[in-house]
Length: 110
Length: 121
Image (tube, rainbow over all chains, first blue to last red; front, side, top):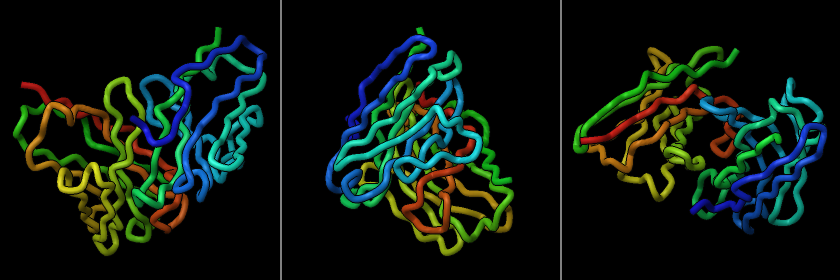
């Protein structure tokens, strides 16, 4: 059972916008910024969003993050087939003194 | 360019010991913490803890405290994750990570390619 809660799956057609939610608590998302990772099949996680909404260089502007209270969201606009991957949210947790993750959301591009 | 290169996959029997490695390059190795994460087959990521390779300080998350040991050899810029007695439930891919900056709670920006550990009798 993951500390952060994500939907196990999401889907959309090319060009659509998909939203992936991430819910936590006061000791993690409520106190710290949220990070999102993209994990393509058979590869290591890759940093996608940090500090709630910032994108590392090289990440397309189609990916955006937001946070409100103890919940966060990842939006992917102009969906492309190469976006098919697992998406993980994460935040530092004061109670556990370490990072906590969501269970991951498997995105399917129909 | 920051790179973390992990050792190859391992197949072990229950009760055996194991040490896997993570060789770092492209930055000052002793300045940063190295974190470790587990991903069981078909599951999400779990944070195991973090090790400051410069002074050997480690912070283990409760689920992993006493189950694994973090260490490093600064002469070869390599961090290690070690088990004394493996269990079948340790079967997973293990990732080493490095934070964005030198703080222990910095988000894990860089990831190794992962090491698959299979424990089976």
